Image (cartoon, rainbow, N blue to C red; front, side, top):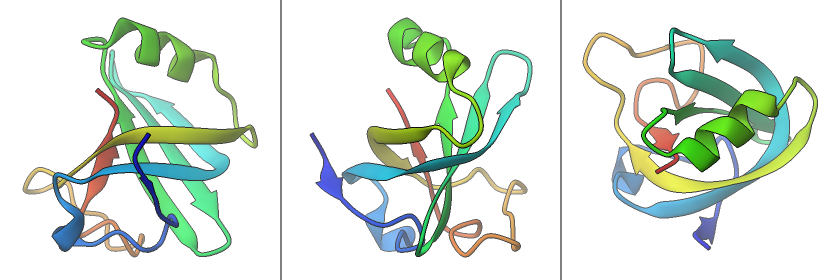
Length: 99
């Protein structure tokens, strides 16, 4: 299990850390085989990313719906250039990816 953190607390300094987020699914998006779950808690929101390379995690994420309570463990990765989201406090710096 990773170090537990709050959804709004991640920064560039967390890149490469294995963390666990607890919260509610704020939104779920399927972008052609890559799933994005925005997780929220009382401190903020964080985008998580699931790809089919990890079939078990991808299948589980595919079954999740808005407002479900989840715990997600993954490695913090920086967003690729050009994909920043200034509307999210963590949108400029990092996004956990489940592997």
